[in-house]
Image (cartoon, rainbow, N blue to C red; front, side, top):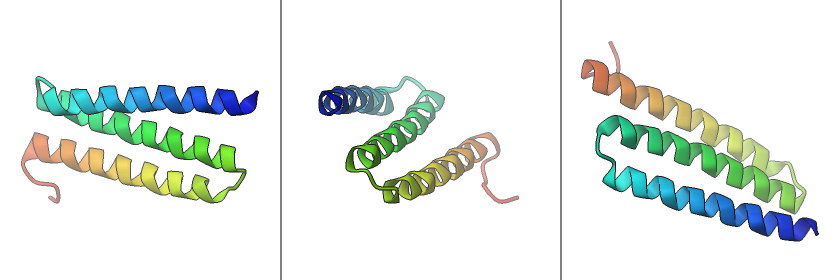
Length: 89
């Protein structure tokens, strides 16, 4: 039964990623696109953690942590660039 739950959750995350991609491509403003990109990072982390749970290994949790750090830094850098025009002061 747990295999069916994994398949359902994989599908839900895939739909969520597609909707985020749609918002990223046709977002009416730049902040909407940044928010969609950040949400895609979060959904990717959820997908990797789910895959790690499905495979029963802890290696994928480390990959999810690396993607979380990359997502946070990139979101902050993009927002800082939009507010001030440069990333490093």
